[in-house]
Length: 231
Image (cartoon, one colour):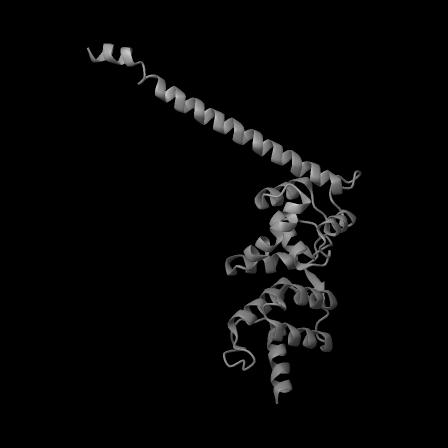
């Protein structure tokens, strides 16, 4: 008898198919929207890409910055490269571009410009900033098998990346680097060591700096220079 009652209503068997159809429609619409977004992201890429290399080169990045009304030396452009996981300084590949712009949900210049403040907030979270700081060094290794960066470039990079967070430490470390004669280049270990120094050492007292701990020698020398300067 129950079987015939179900036949009369005819509803119990149709509900799953209705739900399934709705889900299929939603998936289809979502897929189409995603496809359209990717088309716009790709179209934007080719508006700035070099036709022969197939990537956005330094000239293309400058053109993009001009359209966003952002200076090409702005820290947020380095943050954008970090978001894309760009491997070569001054160049964005299509895959890198897609990765970054999809994550930022930006498929126009206007949307990309509006995304920059939130991108900066994301980068400045403590959980992300150490990775960004490390990336900034690696991004500036422009030669194959290059392991270190010259002092002049390091001073510029430190000022760009870290001076707004640790202005006093960066200013004095840059002064030290420019006046010392022991180091011509800085490597990744020294670069990350200075970041740890800024985060862990009381400044300007330097009370908790212990040269017996595993600090790069350049920081031992910097602290010695600072203490002489403070006398």
